[in-house]
Image (cartoon, rainbow, N blue to C red; front, side, top):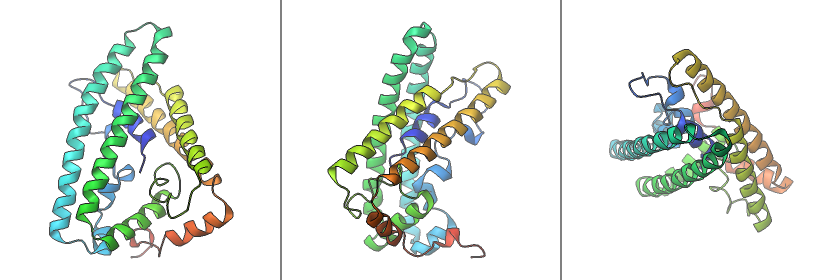
Length: 236
C-alpha cells in the first residue's frame, strides 16, 4: 500500500488559511485512495463479516491516521510556503527534499496503520481484504509490497519496482504546479490539473510495475485476486 504519489499530491493540496476545505481534491482521506476507508464500505463490511467492535476499531485507526496526516500536512504547508519564497533556481532542490520527507512520513504511517489493522482483522478477513484491494488497484505501486512473497519476486524484480517508485516520485515533482493561494478559481483549476497529472503518472507507473512480472507470475496474480468482490459486481 505504498501510496507515495497520492500522499505527495494530497499532502500539499491544502487550501490557504481561512479558505473552505470541503473540496475532496484537498482531502488525503478520499475513499478511492484509502484502503482503511474502503474497508468501511457497507458491501465490504458485509463481505468480510466485520463485527461492530471491529468496525469501531477500524474507525479509530482511521481517525488516528487522519489526525497524524493533518498535523503533518500543516508542517508540509509551512515548508512549502518557505520554498515558494526562495529564488526559482533553489526551489527544485528543496522540493525534492520535501518530497522525500513526505514519502518517508507516508511509508511510516502506512506501516503503522497496517500493523494496527493486522491486529484487528482475523487472518481470513485480512486475506480477503488483500484480495479486494488487489481487485481495486491491480498490481502496482499500491499493492506490490503486499504480494511480493506470494509472487516470489526476485531481488532484481524488487529493485526494478523500487526504481519505478523513484522514477514516479521524480515525475510527480516535475509535474506538480504550486496552486495560487489568493485566487480560488485559479487554485481549484491547478489542483484539478495536478490531480489528473498525478493519476496519469500513477497509471503509467502501475503499468510499468506489472510489466516487471513474468507470465507465470501474472497467472499467479489472477488467482491471488480471489472471487470477484461484491463491491465490483453490478446488481449486488
